[in-house]
Amino acid sequence: MGSYVLRRVLQMIPVFFGTTLLIFLMVYTLPGDPVSALFGEKAADPAVVASIRHKYFLDQPVWKQYLHYMGNLFQGDFGTSFTGRPVSDIMAGAFPVTIRLALLAFVFEMVLGLALGLVSGLRRGSLQDTLVLILTLVVISIPVFVLAYIAQTVFATNLGWVTPTVQNSYDLSQLILPAVVLGSLSLAYVARLTRTSIGENLRADYMRTAVAKGLPGRTIVLRHLLRNSLIPVITFLGTDLGALMGGAIVTEGIFNVQGVGNVLYRAINTKEGPTVVGIVTVLVIVYLVASLLVDLLYAVLDPRIRYA
Amino acid sequence: MPDLTEKKTAEEIPAQAAVAADAKPEKARSLGSDAWHDLRRKPIFVISALLILLLIVIAIAPGLFTSVDPRAGDLRLHYLSKPNYSHFFQADWFGYDLQGRSIYARVVYGARASVVVGICVTLGVTILGGIAGMVAGYFGGWVDTIISRVTDIFFGIPLLLGSLVILNAFTSRTIWSVVFALVALGWTQMTRVMRGSVITVKQADFVTAAKALGAGTGRIMFKHILPNAIAPVIVVATIALGGYIATEATLSFLGIGLQDPTISWGIDINSAQKVIRTAPFALFFPAGMLSLTVLAFIMLGDAVRDALDPKLR
Image (cartoon, rainbow over all chains, first blue to last red; front, side, top):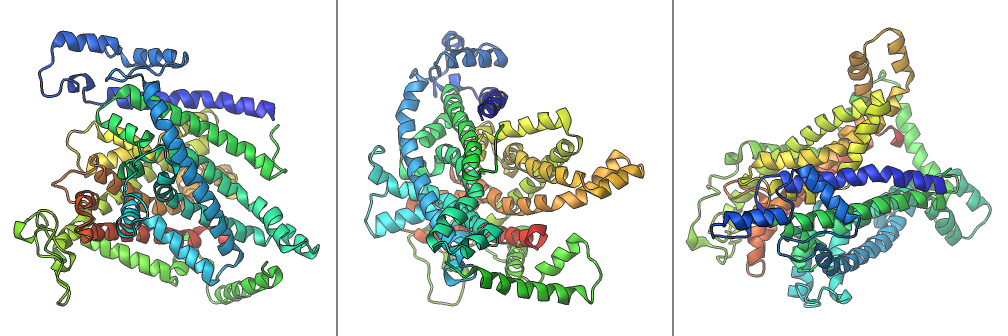
């Protein structure tokens, strides 16, 4: 187990450097000059431009910029944005909001998705099953920004249960509606995956054994069936946690949640290189750690899987 | 707790009957013609295929469906002049947008951008990712290691986020810049699918037989492995097509995808959101068409998967 984890962590290192280098290249080598953009409509003074470029290492070749950035990163320094604010400061403001939003969405999609998948998987071909299938298909085909407007119109404008946009991003109760919208697509996938997986496992030999032994229905479903059916669902949920944190650009924008997605969107549009690279680096780490945890969870769920 | 034994037999009997009925009159079919045989009888496939056919016709010849110019604005007809439902269907059922342009005409003309982006991105990622996956799966060793690590690297960057960064570099964006960004970031998904599929097929006896008969690498790859390994790729590609259409609309909605002279449902949804309270129909129609299109491709993908996946037989 220990050596497996070590091997996986070692494998993560080139991926980490590759992904950060890729985003670094995308941000810093694509056309568009963030420094002259700082001056707005005014003509830029070449001397000032040169000094800003020097300060942010922009006068160096890209590979030197990358090495310099990585050197600072390993000392815990995410750099400074072009507006002069430390990137770690910006992230400290945005990440707590997004983590709350992502966790709410995650709990929502996991609990409801598993429940719906279980209900429809156990009774294939029944009315509930058909309803779940239609519902998930509809949710999958409606893009998230359309869904957000529907939710906003129905729950805020028509019913008046919530305010249309979030006023205090740190208030959990205000984050519920954005979280439901954010998690709905994955909810549909979780429900469908669980349904398929349960359908496959229902026919397994161990299920017949459990029924023959006379175990109570609850034990069979929860201990035997669900545990064995969870593996593909866990894989999906693990990669989704990272996606929820980075993919909330649209939802956070529409509901005015001051989280990572909003900050990223603004940073990309203003070519705030240090902010974009910093946030993406953290997201990459989250993604890598989540996929490692998923692999380790396999062994917990299925004792036949051993990591030597 | 459902009755397991009864369920099993109930499911098996029609399956066996179908097998018996199928086996007698016809001779062995290839996977492709077998799948087609299955698909023709599925209502979901027929419905989604007809929908997609209709969409493609709209995309090729939007002029057949409306004679109104989608870019012609008449300010007297702006969005507050509510749609008129008093007569049999006419274009003004859909209402007019902020600049008095016919929403119906814009919905019709908007199909082209979505369909072109969806099909081109899917073709691009399938060809590029398919070749990379084939090479990685067939040759193995260090070639596989390099290609697999590169796919891992791309997987760390979310599609939407990466395409935002790439598209920001274009000062004027057309359909092709959106296609470029999505292909550049999306090909790795197909690589993974193709690689896994090729590795499974590579071990089959017929590949060893072909090798023993002295077939060259190219012949083995394209004549023997490719036809047998392509099915999962086709399935993933069909389902992904709907996703690419949704991504294009999302990018256009965010103001970073297609730009105004191009007509796109995403752009129209973005301009409609400003008037969502007074004129919800301005958002409803392009959003509805977009969802319907994505739905059609996902249903098609589901049907194709059921027909092609040997595990479900």
